[in-house]
Length: 251
Image (cartoon, rainbow, N blue to C red; front, side):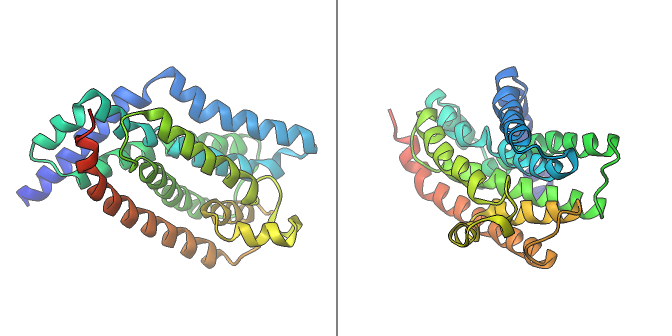
């Protein structure tokens, strides 16, 4: 029991450290929140959609961007500042550090993902099952937070290197995942590509919860999202355990 308590305390300490140092900053809010909002607004106005049609994509891209906005830069930055060495010199493992980073990102992503949900509720736009939506957001923010930490496995102390790679992956995912165009309206080749995007299944289920119609069965959307989450967690832990030594050797 004492070991579990120490483990949870160390994970929470990492999480709270991330919140204070990285997330409670104005530029982070701009990068993680305003960017997806204005991206959504441009498509919303350009296509002349009603608010009800656009609320599902807004929730999806908000969860995606806010949950993965900061995690790619934390470990490279701490490597540069030599604080990672200090953490690992204490009785704490790289796995606990990763879990703390993911937890902080999840809390950040959830806090802002709820805003478009509340916005919809104020306008009378209610999902078919609010409990399912909230549960999906928890799972989705875990998935996208872990994806962000996975990017940071690159053994570098230059945050810009990781940001460049993560942006090169995340931005195309937005456009191939049926976020702004329902899957049934996409060309066949685009639908085939969309099958490999983790964002596709989150967006599809949220759109279905708001009455837009699911392309896939709900159970498939949830199952694939859970599968991607598990794969990202395993890859993240495995890759970081491999690259942490190379990271500590950087001058």
